[in-house]
Image 1 (cartoon, rainbow, N blue to C red):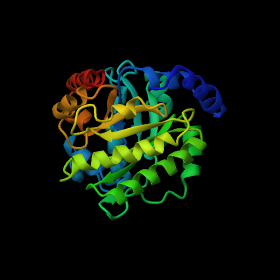
Image 2 (cartoon, rainbow, N blue to C red):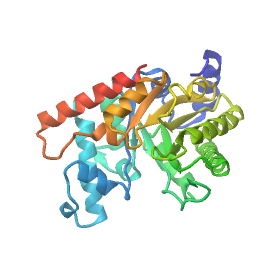
Image 3 (tube, rainbow, N blue to C red):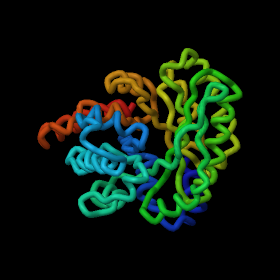
Image 4 (cartoon, rainbow, N blue to C red):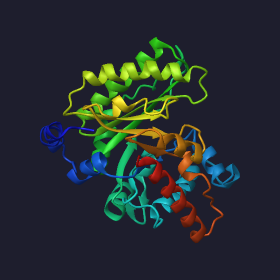
Length: 315
């Protein structure tokens, strides 16, 4: 967490320059209890997410219809009485979700004005082919325009994902360098970046990859001004509290964990053993939700999921 002096500098010298800065959101993200809901499935992951929700591919005939269906799913979650800023600090949105409305209100505006949930936008355009044991992000030539659009929609921060398959020092160094280069572009655009170098949970050298990743992250963070901190989204580590140095680093606003394919129970168990790290779960959050459930059943299942993830995040 940021020290008090650094936090004052951060608020006054950096974020007050931004046209859409919300100091309440900034404080909530830094000190609030709860977790981040990852609702940002894009084209490649949407069919699987819908199938788990009980919606088969035969239910839609093209991509536009598919995104309409998953927006209805996300809207149902966000509009549920279980989904509020008391336990859900923020939600990560796909661009198509940001462009749509919920209950007649822009999605990001609805999240904050009705639920007190901060809106974050997924900005990456997918992954490049694997090389040196990693998958870098594809180029983002229109990022500046997307950042301006995000600010206009009331977005607080961004999220972008790379993947680490094996413990390859060269590849991991390239992943982290790319993430921070883009992250600094996002900071210059007035938003807070979530840097996400995911380590594949099925990697045969996961623990070794985490050692290399932490070293590379610390090197970049030590060069990052404390008045322009970033957030980190990381795979739950093999060793408990392995990322505690990152949690405490003055250039880190928050460290969040992805579920990465773990079941909710497994993800919560692992998360609860990593002090200061909060969840940013996607599949683990929606596990057990179904399009066939009544609203009463759906809300009860979502409430149970949120309660368990909230508890695991506050350790």
